[in-house]
Image: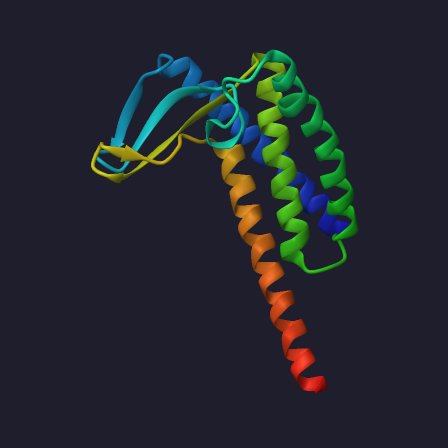
Length: 169
Protein backbone atom coordinates (compact mmCIF):
# COMPACT_ATOMS: atom_id res chain seq x y z
CA UNK A 1 0.00 0.00 0.00
CA UNK A 2 2.92 2.33 0.68
CA UNK A 3 4.21 1.79 -2.87
CA UNK A 4 0.80 2.60 -4.35
CA UNK A 5 0.59 5.79 -2.31
CA UNK A 6 4.17 6.85 -3.12
CA UNK A 7 3.84 6.17 -6.85
CA UNK A 8 0.39 7.78 -6.91
CA UNK A 9 1.88 10.88 -5.27
CA UNK A 10 4.71 10.85 -7.82
CA UNK A 11 2.19 10.62 -10.67
CA UNK A 12 0.22 13.53 -9.21
CA UNK A 13 3.39 15.65 -8.93
CA UNK A 14 4.33 14.82 -12.54
CA UNK A 15 0.84 15.78 -13.75
CA UNK A 16 1.15 19.04 -11.83
CA UNK A 17 4.65 19.69 -13.26
CA UNK A 18 3.33 18.97 -16.76
CA UNK A 19 0.41 21.38 -16.39
CA UNK A 20 2.48 24.13 -14.73
CA UNK A 21 5.18 23.91 -17.42
CA UNK A 22 2.58 24.06 -20.19
CA UNK A 23 0.88 27.05 -18.57
CA UNK A 24 4.22 28.84 -18.22
CA UNK A 25 4.98 28.31 -21.91
CA UNK A 26 1.55 29.53 -23.01
CA UNK A 27 1.93 32.63 -20.80
CA UNK A 28 5.49 33.47 -21.86
CA UNK A 29 6.04 32.37 -25.47
CA UNK A 30 3.76 33.31 -28.36
CA UNK A 31 2.22 30.39 -30.25
CA UNK A 32 4.64 29.23 -32.96
CA UNK A 33 7.66 30.97 -31.43
CA UNK A 34 10.64 29.50 -29.62
CA UNK A 35 13.36 30.74 -27.29
CA UNK A 36 16.94 29.50 -27.49
CA UNK A 37 18.11 27.95 -24.23
CA UNK A 38 21.28 26.20 -25.45
CA UNK A 39 22.19 27.41 -28.93
CA UNK A 40 21.94 24.65 -31.52
CA UNK A 41 20.83 22.05 -28.97
CA UNK A 42 17.73 23.04 -26.98
CA UNK A 43 14.90 25.55 -27.37
CA UNK A 44 11.67 26.16 -25.51
CA UNK A 45 8.82 26.45 -27.98
CA UNK A 46 5.06 26.95 -27.97
CA UNK A 47 3.54 24.27 -30.19
CA UNK A 48 -0.02 22.95 -30.37
CA UNK A 49 -0.39 19.28 -31.21
CA UNK A 50 -3.89 18.24 -32.28
CA UNK A 51 -2.70 14.72 -33.09
CA UNK A 52 -1.04 11.93 -31.16
CA UNK A 53 2.66 11.42 -30.48
CA UNK A 54 4.89 12.98 -33.14
CA UNK A 55 1.85 14.76 -34.60
CA UNK A 56 0.35 11.55 -35.99
CA UNK A 57 -3.27 12.10 -36.98
CA UNK A 58 -3.26 15.91 -36.88
CA UNK A 59 -5.30 16.14 -40.07
CA UNK A 60 -8.00 13.73 -38.87
CA UNK A 61 -11.69 14.55 -38.80
CA UNK A 62 -13.22 15.77 -35.54
CA UNK A 63 -15.02 12.44 -35.00
CA UNK A 64 -11.79 10.46 -35.38
CA UNK A 65 -9.91 12.91 -33.13
CA UNK A 66 -12.55 12.67 -30.40
CA UNK A 67 -12.66 8.88 -30.57
CA UNK A 68 -8.90 8.25 -30.70
CA UNK A 69 -7.55 11.23 -28.74
CA UNK A 70 -10.25 11.70 -26.08
CA UNK A 71 -12.51 8.73 -25.41
CA UNK A 72 -10.20 5.81 -26.15
CA UNK A 73 -7.41 7.31 -23.98
CA UNK A 74 -9.85 7.61 -21.06
CA UNK A 75 -10.59 3.87 -21.34
CA UNK A 76 -6.85 3.25 -21.69
CA UNK A 77 -6.23 5.20 -18.44
CA UNK A 78 -8.58 2.89 -16.56
CA UNK A 79 -6.76 -0.13 -17.98
CA UNK A 80 -3.38 1.37 -16.96
CA UNK A 81 -4.77 2.02 -13.46
CA UNK A 82 -5.71 -1.67 -13.21
CA UNK A 83 -2.22 -2.67 -14.41
CA UNK A 84 -0.69 -0.28 -11.87
CA UNK A 85 -2.57 -2.00 -9.03
CA UNK A 86 -1.81 -5.49 -10.37
CA UNK A 87 1.93 -4.78 -10.52
CA UNK A 88 2.12 -2.93 -7.19
CA UNK A 89 3.50 -6.00 -5.40
CA UNK A 90 5.84 -7.01 -8.24
CA UNK A 91 9.10 -5.48 -9.44
CA UNK A 92 9.26 -1.76 -8.67
CA UNK A 93 10.17 -0.80 -12.24
CA UNK A 94 6.85 -2.20 -13.54
CA UNK A 95 4.59 -0.30 -11.15
CA UNK A 96 6.81 2.77 -11.62
CA UNK A 97 6.35 2.45 -15.40
CA UNK A 98 2.56 2.22 -15.13
CA UNK A 99 2.48 5.23 -12.79
CA UNK A 100 4.51 7.18 -15.37
CA UNK A 101 2.20 6.15 -18.21
CA UNK A 102 -0.82 7.18 -16.15
CA UNK A 103 0.74 10.56 -15.33
CA UNK A 104 1.63 11.19 -18.97
CA UNK A 105 -1.76 10.12 -20.29
CA UNK A 106 -3.66 12.23 -17.77
CA UNK A 107 -1.40 15.24 -18.34
CA UNK A 108 -2.11 15.22 -22.07
CA UNK A 109 -5.79 14.36 -21.63
CA UNK A 110 -6.24 17.44 -19.45
CA UNK A 111 -5.00 19.53 -22.38
CA UNK A 112 -7.17 17.73 -24.90
CA UNK A 113 -10.36 18.17 -22.88
CA UNK A 114 -9.55 21.73 -21.80
CA UNK A 115 -7.96 23.11 -24.98
CA UNK A 116 -8.68 20.65 -27.78
CA UNK A 117 -4.94 20.10 -28.35
CA UNK A 118 -1.77 19.32 -26.39
CA UNK A 119 0.78 22.02 -25.61
CA UNK A 120 4.33 20.90 -26.45
CA UNK A 121 7.45 22.88 -25.60
CA UNK A 122 10.70 20.92 -25.42
CA UNK A 123 12.67 21.12 -28.67
CA UNK A 124 16.01 19.31 -28.94
CA UNK A 125 18.26 19.50 -32.03
CA UNK A 126 20.54 16.79 -33.35
CA UNK A 127 22.28 19.14 -35.78
CA UNK A 128 22.72 22.83 -35.19
CA UNK A 129 19.33 24.51 -35.76
CA UNK A 130 18.56 22.39 -38.82
CA UNK A 131 16.96 19.18 -37.60
CA UNK A 132 15.15 18.75 -34.34
CA UNK A 133 13.25 15.95 -32.67
CA UNK A 134 9.50 16.33 -32.50
CA UNK A 135 8.59 18.90 -29.88
CA UNK A 136 7.30 17.23 -26.71
CA UNK A 137 6.35 17.93 -23.08
CA UNK A 138 6.71 16.52 -19.56
CA UNK A 139 3.78 14.10 -20.08
CA UNK A 140 5.37 12.72 -23.25
CA UNK A 141 8.65 12.26 -21.36
CA UNK A 142 6.85 10.22 -18.69
CA UNK A 143 5.39 7.88 -21.30
CA UNK A 144 8.75 7.51 -23.06
CA UNK A 145 10.61 6.61 -19.86
CA UNK A 146 7.82 4.15 -18.99
CA UNK A 147 8.08 2.50 -22.40
CA UNK A 148 11.84 2.07 -21.92
CA UNK A 149 11.22 0.46 -18.50
CA UNK A 150 8.61 -1.93 -19.90
CA UNK A 151 10.86 -2.88 -22.83
CA UNK A 152 13.67 -3.49 -20.33
CA UNK A 153 11.35 -5.73 -18.31
CA UNK A 154 10.34 -7.65 -21.43
CA UNK A 155 13.98 -8.19 -22.42
CA UNK A 156 14.93 -9.33 -18.91
CA UNK A 157 11.96 -11.74 -18.74
CA UNK A 158 12.74 -13.11 -22.19
CA UNK A 159 16.38 -13.61 -21.22
CA UNK A 160 15.45 -15.37 -17.97
CA UNK A 161 13.02 -17.70 -19.78
CA UNK A 162 15.66 -18.51 -22.38
CA UNK A 163 18.23 -19.28 -19.65
CA UNK A 164 15.71 -21.44 -17.83
CA UNK A 165 14.92 -23.33 -21.04
CA UNK A 166 18.63 -23.92 -21.64
CA UNK A 167 19.01 -25.20 -18.07
CA UNK A 168 16.08 -27.61 -18.50
CA UNK A 169 17.65 -29.28 -21.54
